[in-house]
Length: 140
Image 1 (cartoon, one colour):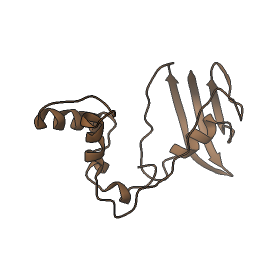
Image 2 (image 1 turned 90 degrees about the horizontal axis):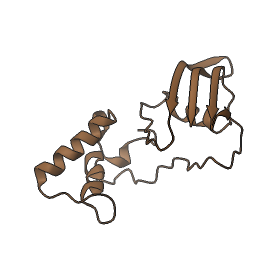
Image 3 (image 1 turned 180 degrees about the vertical axis):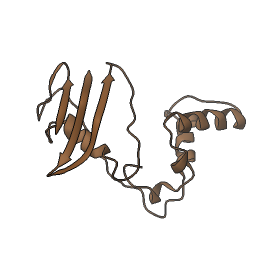
Image 4 (image 1 turned 180 degrees about the horizontal axis):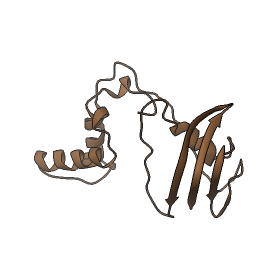
C-alpha cells in the first residue's frame, strides 16, 4: 500500500530526515513513534501530498502521492488530555486489555501486566509508559 525508497523530507533548505526505505502492506497496523521533532508529522504530510519529497520516491496505492486522494483517511492528532489528568500511559494501554468494548478481557493481574508490558515494548514506548498522558506531547 505504501512504499518509499531513499525518501527525504525538507523544509526550505533544511533536510529534516533522509534515507527512508519502507514497505507497508495492505492490512498492516503501524505505529509511528518518536521524540518531538523527529519528523513524524512531516512523514504524514508527505503521505497526504501536502509536502513534496526532497529526494527519493513515495507511492501510495501503487502511484505517486497526490493531495486530496479520497482513498486516504486521516485524523489529525489533537492533544485533548488535561495536563493534570493523572492516568499514565501504561494504565491507558491497560484499558484496552480489560475495558468494556475496548479490547480483550484478561483475568489475573499478572497476566494483564504482562500483556501491557509486551504492548509497550512492541512500540518502544517504555520512556513514555509511566508518564501522565496530560504531560506528553501529541507525538509522544
